[in-house]
Length: 358
Image (cartoon, rainbow, N blue to C red):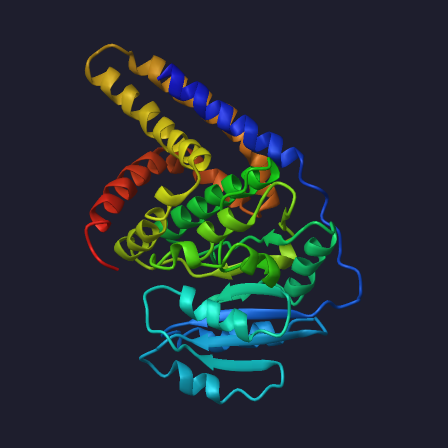
């Protein structure tokens, strides 16, 4: 238990150190407007895609195109998109019917006119009309930057699953932002991600993991990014919101698909992510076992847990403020207990998932 507690504390100290390295958010300058291709891969997105397209086309940016590629939808997605008449809009149809988005994204990237590529999903809404401008500004701040990681929070709803989904999204973002700031980037999220076409092709795109349905963001970032060519963007104007899954089964299924790619991460990232999860699980697991065996008094256990919460909360509250998630602080003790349970179910689910085809 003591070792787990120390490991958890060390992780949060490192995340706090990364937080201290965040540069102040600067407002993007007016022009010049570098040409940008915004790309969305869409499959059966008829309920959300029009709102997403409308939000992108309404961006306050003077030099961009929007490419939506319909990836073999079986609903009326293509018909809805075909009715859009806008010179900035380009509708494509995927030519390879395979699992995942990689084939469709690769086709869209080849068809794009510009070197700067900005990605989101068919169910996402930028929080402001400054999204493109802010993400490009992050690219321009350093001439060596080729990859920009944006933030993709969940819409807030008054449900327990939504609270947990927003917390897990926040916690994951803290990790990938922190590792990027510390010079060991490993992932981003496809709903808010910018990179140059040139670095995509330099990394051979999705070629090394094309047979895996997932990994179009994390495995790609791991291949493309390094300590000198990556930047993060946590400007509120550049947040891109999406809906969390509406039920536990769908949510866990989605997260299980994501975790199955982690076995292909670099060794250092696999080690750090595994140790982080194991320390969370073992901390509470050892306390429970010690209580059951009578080797730890309940008051002592409670004091240990409260001390963990105080120190951890002090170290991560800054991230909550910067990522506009302060409301989650109220639920923190409960969420901190649920996270190890979630990690356990996710690991078991991923083991089962590997035995089945996508």
